[in-house]
Amino acid sequence: MKHLEEPFGLRSLSLKKLYAILAFAAIFSIASCSNNNDDDHVVQPTNYPVENPLSKYHETAGFTTTTNFINSGDYEFGLAFSPDVKGKITAITIKLPDTNPNLRVTIWDYTTKTVLRTETFNVTATNTLITKEISELALEKDKKYLITMNSNDWYKRAKADNSNATYPITAGNIKILEYRWGSGTTQTFPVNISLNYNGGDLSFNFQQMD
Image 1: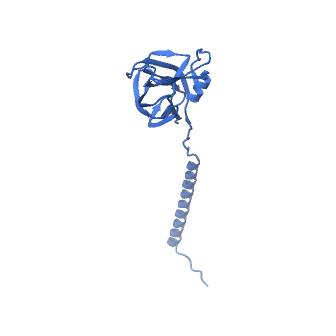
Image 2: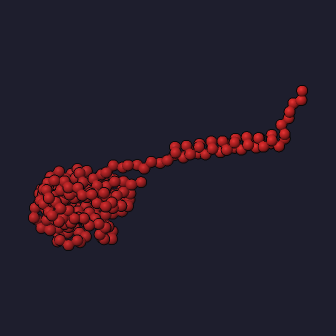
Image 3: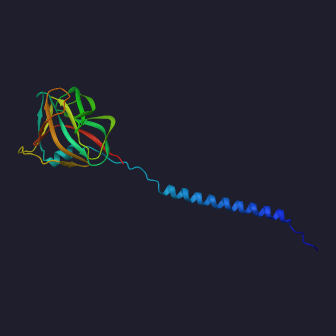
């Protein structure tokens, strides 16, 4: 009995289909492994905690005594600082011993003495911490800034013996450089520096960025 042989052309066509299928499967397998490897190496953004340097600054400076000043003359005053990392200010915080419906807060470029941001607070409650979220303000690493308020009410934080604090003072990722003040109601970069107290309480919420 004769065996029927498959025509050469048909056999060749079948092999070509087989090779094509195998090649496609190999390419798919390689692509799949590549995608899996890519997924394994995706870097997720770090959600850094929000910091407020004021309490740590007072503690490190040794400013343990507090005196209230109410209706004691108008001044532009606040803290010069520098971030140790790139970050952003997300909110401003304030606490006063008296109410103020129109408290002006300014954030300055320390070097150029130009205004970066002006915010207005309606302080309706005394001795109460008020937090105002603001449009995020990006801060550069190691760049010097100044945050001030214009007020005739404040807390004076000082050492018991009224001696000078040693600057700079590190509070988390913020380095406090000095306390500055100037008299008057105009939005003017203050020129006076005092080392033995802080007039406040004015501060900000800071968050590190990658």
